Amino acid sequence: MQRRRLKTLSVLVENQPGVLARIAGLIARRGFNIESLAVGPTDDPIFSRMTLVVDESQVHVEQIVKQLYKLINVIKITEFEPDDSVERELMLVSVRATPEKRFQVIELAEIYGGRIADVGADSICLELSGPPGDLDDLLDLLEPHGVSEVARTGRVALERARKATVL
Image (cartoon, rainbow, N blue to C red):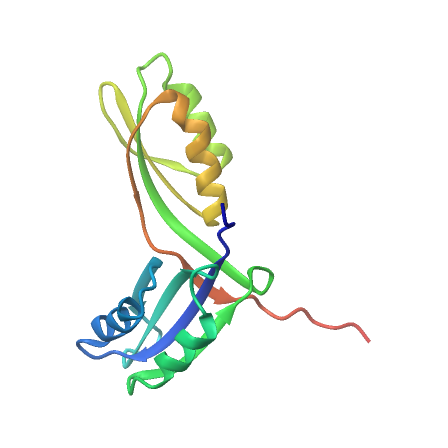
């Protein structure tokens, strides 16, 4: 089995109708899958930032970047390396948890910085944000308790702040 290598692309685009559809269509027409997609406005309302995650083992990232730059609404594309970026994702997860087992579930969530979003008679809904790998790890730990539903946003990323050099 080929190892999945995920690549994160940040695409700054004009905030215009149809831009998302054109970009997703361009990638789909080439037979590539988008693993994750998050879109939102930037601090300047005329621009939006699209964060795309693609599997590098299936995609020629350079080819996608060249094709995206041909679209008139694309302003800038940044390829993020894991060490040079801060990447986060939001997850809501509903876990079957009787009142007797609820404390264990809450304790696991708190270790990962999560909080309670909703509580039912036999379930609890947790809200977490963090690096995608951490969210995957928590899901693995919650699985024995009975995960009933999961909703995750697409990954968002920004370039990591540069460290000051000491002379």
